[in-house]
Image (cartoon, rainbow, N blue to C red; front, side, top):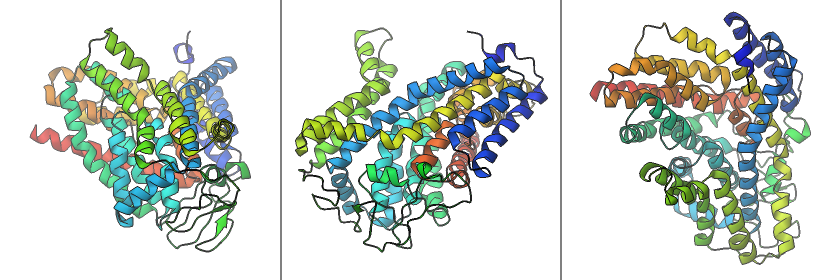
Length: 511
């Protein structure tokens, strides 16, 4: 299939203007006219395609292809993760994990604990998988502590994002290693070294700071689905903000707060009392269940992690085409691993806690309703990104970079930054930037090649904004406005990118 980029006749200045106008359309529709993000992204893609001279049919094809790819990948992962999360909550397994965590970690140390846990599971997990597995726990822990939601959420997101950009076996770093012919072991070692300061600065340090200004509060529909009625900001008030289904899409508009219900109050019919879990039979009249053990709960949640880690291990040590490698490739595929985790959860969290088949089915099906809006917005974000790619915006950055006379490490970072800003895709930015700077890698030694891979990976994380599906994923899960998402998520990504580049340059002085 010939893409729009292959037949585009627009000049480079026109493509730059098209990208800027498309992004501006999305931002203005959401923040000024208060249009739903799903519709705004569709309209922004139409403006982009029109100005870039793609033609109506090519624009439609690009957008729908991006939507289909995103739903087929990220959408399935979100849905399966939500099912595991629903069973985890309905069985009270989440309460068991929360109590075990909170009882062993002080409230002040919770952001650091979440950053460490997210970084650990982020080694084998794709970013989106880690998000859908961690978000229910983040929401529940924040609701039962005096910490703002973003003080816990930002460290978790930072841990996942750093590993996604710096460390193989994630697709971006692996692709860059292949293109630049870098040593995987050195890249892994340097990546882990760089991950430590990046996670600390962009995670608990930045999260604690920004939570003072943007505490965050998840959508009431998500909270209700997770068995939580409210999040509690640092001032002790219990609030729940109405989200996308209630028209909250503006940057400065009405946030739909339900008001101060008191420290022990209830919202949306669910009781939250400090760190004390709700009784076995809550106010919604659910039948009492036996809470699963910590071991069974942790084993269930980690099953997808272990399966995907096994696949990553096989890719590193087993011959391609061997029987063992083939088996691990199948069972460790993210969709297969999460499906296995969902089926296991139906037994270990569902039946083992006393649920009958009807209730398990209702719990699994009920977990899909609250994420429908998220799926549509994330899918539309993928469509907008694909339209940018097919219009040839990334090629503009590539042509400019070829004649730049600067350090290969800095050039790799800058090219990845430009493509990331234009397309929204970290993986696309990594692969494209690696290809552009590949001729400059001929004179580098093994450590230099590994550092070049990491410089490109750091650049690919720079300032996620409205053309990145991850931007909308975070916005919807954490109940943020567009402006708040930029202040939290986008700045966090930029910190990771800048700290990563600084670390690469410092390592280059000593290796």
